[in-house]
Amino acid sequence: MPEPPIEIFYRLANVLLGVSVLTAAAFIVVEIGRRPTSRREPLGIVVCVLFLTIGLRAILRAFVGELALARVDLVWTVVAVDGLAAITAVALLALRRRYALFIETATVVREYETEYAAKAQEARSLAQVNEELRRLDELKSEFLAMVSHELRTPLTAIVGYSRLLLRQMHGPLNARQIEHQEAIFRSAQRLTDLINDLLDVSRLEAARVELHPRPTDARQVVDHVMGVVRVAAHAKQIRLANELDSTLPQVQADPTRLHQILVNLLGNAIKFTPAGGAVRVRGGRHNSQVWIAVEDTGVGIAVEELARIWDPFYQVESPMRRSHGGSGLGLAIVRRLVELHGGMVRAESDGENRGSRFSFTLPVATKPAVAESVPEPEPNIEPILAGREVLIVEDDEASQALMRAVVEDTLGGRTRVCSDGEEAVKEATSRPPALILLDLMLPRLSGWEVARRLRQQPSTRGLPIIAVSALARPQEREAALHAGCDAYLSKPFLPDELARVVTTTLLGETVAAR
Image (tube, rainbow, N blue to C red; front, side, top):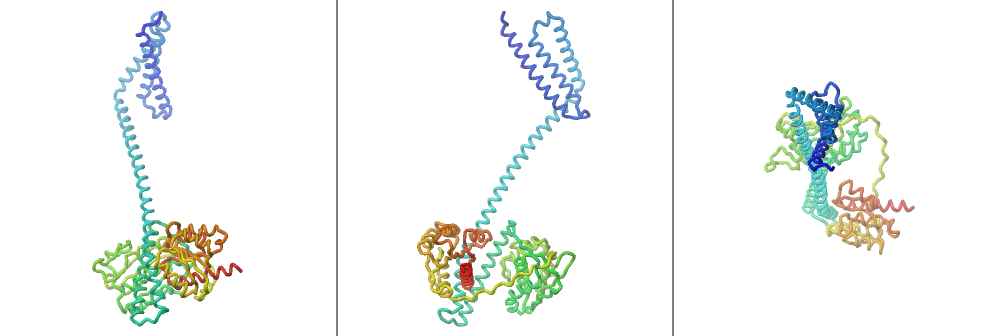
């Protein structure tokens, strides 16, 4: 006789209850087993036993049902299970003071999950912010590179033509005209220095400046820098003195960057020292460091300003009422370069109109200086092209005209000009010139790609190529040389610099051919 539907439902409900409760009990057993004996909570054990008895009771009722009344052994089994459940329930009631533990534990778990979700969201937000900052940093670098390119390109014509006019190749200039041309050149050089400082600050902040330290004679570097700033010092009748002792040990430093540090410090000292004053450089050794100080008799610095003068763009004078020029970048560059060398900088002053003292430290060189080979003398600038043809690839008309003037008037060559990359490849392959002057930022096809394509063609594989570009970052220079250029000249350049690079490149080609 088939079972009625109510009996079937009764059995299914007990099976479902038994399986669920026994599974929960099994999970509790596993969790209890993971904990040391001393940390096992009695309430948890009681709950586990209660779940086990409820599960067993449900399974027995599902599979035994009414037969339990007919069979004595099953009756006692059911009674035993029910008794165990009753005892467990009493034990659970006796542990009622521990009920708060479950609520607290649940609250802690919920708070942990909420906190974990918040932390995960915060981590995702930080990752997004970091990615945005990285992208902004790349955009800033690209922007600075583009601004540098756009500023250097017109400066090339200003600097170049002012030098060509001073040569008086197309007629003599009177004294006033020469003075004006010199003023144009100095102003262009000042603007070039400002662009270089901006790029240096950007690279230093992004930790993209690589040093090449080696044992360096600081006294020799100071002598060289004093030669650079001597004209400005003489104009104000300022006395310069290099008081570094000849016995001072060599420092472990990048000579180019040490030169830049001293140019900034000495330039500032001369700028802020009144006429008739004095600037001196002193130094000494302290343990494993060499200290170098630039002291002046200038306007001095207020005590409250000493900590802020190292910040980029900060100037003690009000921008609207200042009597000295400058961008406020020099000292920021000095501090970062010194710190990259592992040294420290310090500024001291007894107050306004009482002079100032800027000092920095550098590590003592642990190895002797490697003997440097004597550089070969620069070749004389002669009409080395002697009627040979030069292909000028440049899209800026003023730069085109300047390079043509140098090639034709100084080096005695002939020129062809094209203003985009694809045209340059066609011109060079159809009529290979003796030399190519190649800009890198070109329409249609970049200068890097032009160089690569020319190096792949048999007819132009050996052509001398000089990259002439307003892109002055190291990575762009390396990319140009890697693409196949033989030399690299940054804009703005002096006509003599272009002539020397062309002469050196062609002489190198001749030597290599031999």
